[in-house]
Image (cartoon, rainbow, N blue to C red; front, side, top):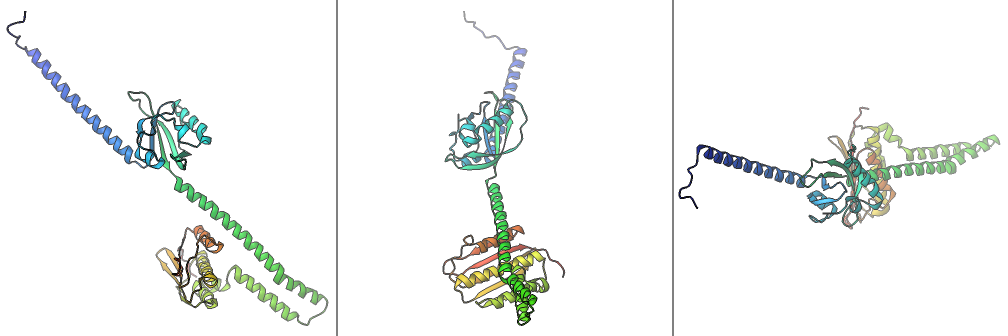
Length: 355
């Protein structure tokens, strides 16, 4: 039978009810805090520049466990990588075993640091990365491991360019040495040998003229190696000589002060090569050369009013200048729109010396 009157709550009942209510409030606040922390961690992960992906012990990508940088860099839509075995889909086939062993080592508890590797985009392009594998605290769904990578493709490209530049410098030096040997053998050496034979035979007639010609030829060779005026009198004087030899009229502005020997030589060869190209290809009527110090740099500009269309990488001359500047941490740029002349800019890190 249903009681007619309900039992009046006791003091203990009221305390228990308040306790339960307080616990629920505390629990709800804790859940809200955890949710905020989860959202914060997701925001940090998705806005981080590193490529992040969570995998299980067998290398399988966890559902929804790739960040925005991973998806954008490798070209995957959100959740598209779910369930894929990492080393079977995201590295080149020849790197799969090495990557699998690396991840399995960390899963087994063995320490493993950063390493360089290659990851693949969805279209099969290679992205060079510096990556790590790190164990995470266990989730309710089981243990997980974080793969984190930084895209170093640009750095690898620069390293390749430096290697190619060094190879060109070595090849250019070898070619210059061979050319000098040929010039010496075919020119001044032959003159001196002929002079020696004439002197041995007692024939003095013409010996003085022959000796003078040999000396002049040696001087010409020496000027081709390094201009004497550049060593003795500096950059401005050497550029005046180069400008005077140019078949195209040159407007020259150059500072009178002296600079470091390598800086002066680099600026000299930039102007010399540029003026040689103007004479050969530009069909210009005028060319200007401007050299000035700007803070910690020496700026060199050579501009002509010719036909334009110069290719900075098409010939060995400008490419060699780029290599020479790169060796000094300098820069070379070429602006040459068709029909609007050519403008060459060089920036050389400056180290002045008192001379």
